[in-house]
Length: 385
Image 1: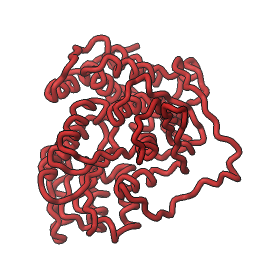
Image 2: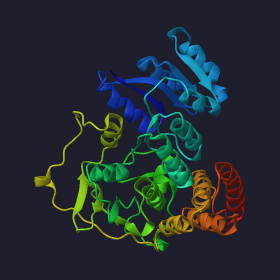
Image 3: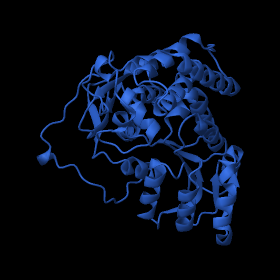
Image 4: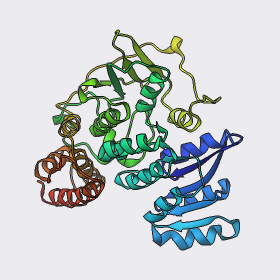
């Protein structure tokens, strides 16, 4: 039987690549639900090709357009955030790919886990904000939780079949577009420079997170919850070639690494097909043509977001939620030209100092924290000099 797939965030970079993977294995997968925020044109195109049972356009302003375009195709059309969660409770798919960006991915993910749906997670913020709540719920519900981030997929693959716990994991990073630059040299970088990632094609928000290296900080927090690690067991290595996607070290000193060309379709396909590996036309690494693979420690002075993330996870509670909310606003304000690149970590740090801390937050506390910190960060962005 085909595995029925729901894709939340189908019009983004991960979602569109997932549809490419599924198109190459139509005998194994069937897309039954597509969900997007407001890119109605692309959602309509995708639905016309995939013919899912249902689609969700989260922004109600686009509902009529999507409904009218798909009316003759017997495709149900929903709108609003609640619809994203309600569809989780229906018998429409076996696995959902969460590729939505930001805090908005949290509630649908929790709904999926509560409904017993297998989750392929491509949203960093879900585990950053509510890692303990989500992973505890997944254990109770015995729900498969497969990481899609290339780094966490690599660790997941390295641990497959192992009965021993890792001693340490190494998250690799390209270093982003500003690798090798000092803090002073980054004072005047612009949005176009920050979006120009040397290896990966990604959305605007995650591209800026890569430029600040906050994405690696987020991945440290993710790794803690996914693999039951302490922050001291997680190191970051800058690896410009992006061939080694992460490594696991065991108690006897053995290291296992997952290697491959930088192509997100590989971890997407592995998550959708797990525990099986499928044929793929992705490129292969040619080691005879590979002159060197290099590794170095990140410059934490030039990229202070790394230490902000480590500090957040060491403090715990709702501090990672504060970190994420402040980062989302700061990145958005930078993309709009309201603040400068070097001010992103300053805004985040100020919010971490000023926001109310809760050591054992419930879900509702996280919602309130996110709301208050976003407002606080917006005010800081307006007043910063």
